[in-house]
Length: 72
Image 1: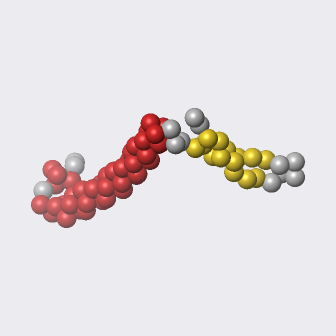
Image 2: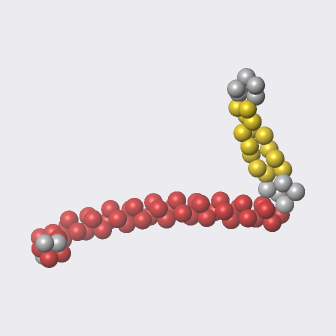
Image 3: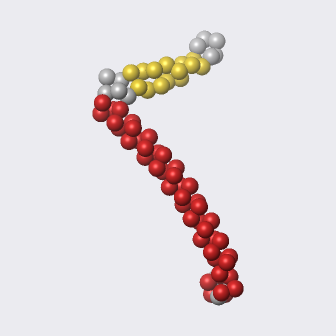
């Protein structure tokens, strides 16, 4: 039997479930908005010809650094 079918005695429990799900959705929405903002910036930079790609560079000694590769 579902919580809804059990009636008013489970109202607070159902409300808690809804609030928990709302928090999860808000967190996911925030993550998606951040990703969308990054995409929009990247698209803008591509259109302006200012996109720079960072690439890992490994030396013979095994050290890692970043190199900027400019795209025309």
